[in-house]
Length: 311
Ligand code: CP
Ligand code: NVA
Image 1 (cartoon, rainbow, N blue to C red):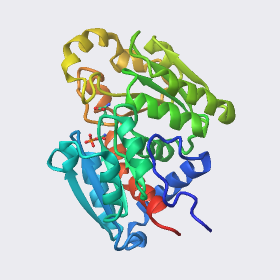
Image 2 (cartoon, rainbow, N blue to C red; image 1 turned 90 degrees about the vertical axis):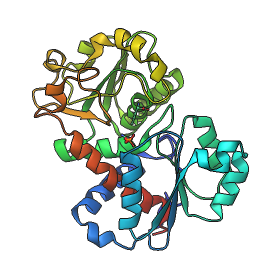
Image 3 (tube, rainbow, N blue to C red; image 1 turned 45 degrees about the vertical axis):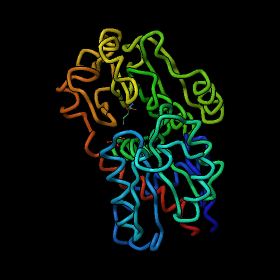
């Protein structure tokens, strides 16, 4: 069977059909169960990774993943490349396309990544931008699937900043039929164009999408509780101001009692205990944060196989 994802770029999950998305999760589960069976699947393939923002998990899981699949990675700090001195994206894209088989990039501007994808002849993978974090969603949904046995019909409540994670939950969840309730302080809601995509997807998938300003309402009867840092990379100068604005948006026991009794807690990490989440929740029995982080490896191996292997 022809692999419909071969050669695709993944910028924000809108590139995937529901079937393609679910097939990545299925492959991730299969690779996790039998990693040795996939050794050599990407033999001779090279992934370039460009970082303009810090990373622990994304960098390590992509590099470990491509090595385990038989390929290799070249890691670039954008500051030490000519990109950091203003070389046009077009030239960078054309040149890199002649050296490597795919590029994973973590940066600020979604527009820049879109231009890179337009000009490159190889897949571009968004490893986090200001507005999206698609690879994290693959790992998170794999974790939910492993813990709950299903994705469709699950209610996921995200409490906090309407940031890249909130956006990617909205797009991914609405694509596959998950209900997504987002609660943010007033003025920190997800971007309107992302909410519009989610509503459009939801018409097809049957998801219920809610954008709220009341954390308790969002969390009511949720199967999965998620939060993320109040100040993302690039927002550091707003940390103090955000601590005040977000103080009623902490995921703690008072809030979690509104969720289902067997709720699952997720956080993409890095986390700030005592800010967006209390220590007893993130380190408690409902938390699957380390399984979630571990699944970055398996989910991204599945993604790379789909994008970089013809079969
Ligand atoms: N969750 C995540 O993307 O982690 P890193 O910033 O460490 O890559
Ligand atoms: N929203 C966070 C996610 C970090 C993995 C950020 O962009 O910094």
